[in-house]
Image (cartoon, rainbow, N blue to C red):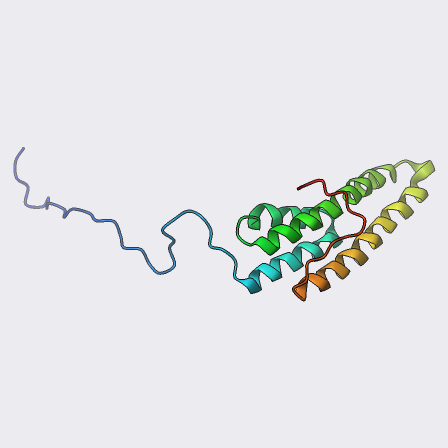
Length: 140
């Protein structure tokens, strides 16, 4: 090969230094006590929408904050059975003969979840663990 003056030797590439915002590990940082209480509160308030918010919060934050893990599991255990029943009731609303009955059942479940989720969210926001009196405790 001939020396081509247009072709210069490139310097050895070094990895770019880490900035203050990059983590050295792939694991997430633990939650601060304030964030831990905030996510635990949101897990209970999410019960207004069924079991999905508490499930997502549990899966994402269970290893990052002990209070969030405990309370999101409690909220998930409480909201999972009524959510399943509400989904079934909403499907049965499509049957004309029984639609009125199951519409009332679905609405009653939503009111039930809303009242108890708000009560639990308020208690947890104050830093107190909340235990639902009617809870199956499917997750341990």
